Image 1 (spheres, one colour):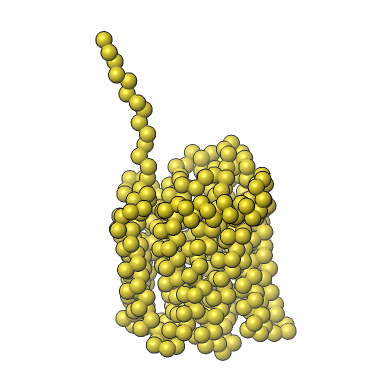
Image 2: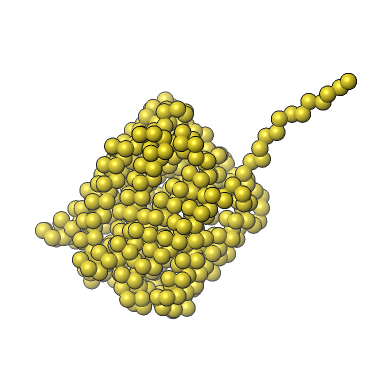
Length: 419
């Protein structure tokens, strides 16, 4: 396979793997509700699904560098598929108590971030070999994630509505198995650059020293400190919306799992289009102001509509607008990360950045469950939209946020000619 085919294979693996994750986020809350669970139980399940990502990020990155990027991608999808398949098998045979469901959800998410970090490290080498600009390649990678939402959310909603949440989890396991097979057969690191050539080379400093080195890099870099803080808070609020509040709002107001799938799929489809389109213009626009405007729009409309108690047509329109804006966010951050992180540290730093960014997600779903029971779903949506809007304006304050802008191209010195 040539370089472009290997790049497309990597993107296909990302789509299929993430599609499995999206179907899981739709199926698990309704599996809890089908057992007679409450809003608090849904929040607890969301906590169990997201906290392993925070644990897997810091410790998985250095492990990925030892195991190899392709093998890590394959292994992570196999583990996710096997644990999710165990849920319907147990439910249809000996029974699936709530604690067992939580344990399986926990294990299934433990290797998600290391697997994605491995694919992300493979991206720049394959893009360079294929002659694709970095920002465009990152845009396509993020678009593949958005495409998985476009496919997975409606598919998950239809499967849950038609066959039940356990049948949807069987399909999820099949998706993970397919992603593992595609990666094992089709994905190879680029052999003509340093990142690809060292993809399977083990680090020499020791596992714990590698983790400590990556941690020091994240802590000492002024830009990454701000990014982690910002994304930690916004991801907490996003988790409150997507894992707990939106399923509850869909069940109460929009008509159930199918409506939830259409809303989430609309957001994902618009974000996919936004990522693809932005990839072709990213090198022409200022990063920081674009980031702020799109970040505010990515949360505001899709949070305001349910806060006002509006119906499905309004939710679909707001999700489309927010999705288009959200499509520009990760391509900007992804390009900056690849520019600032040394090649040999990318897997561990991606894992640490991901863990720091995801640290608030388990708490977001859990707190949203308690808040929804205490003050109601709409009031909780109202509080979230205010907090989200205020926080996403932070990059306008300047300071280290200015490091987001792309570095100025170096100019060759002009020799003075004397006569």
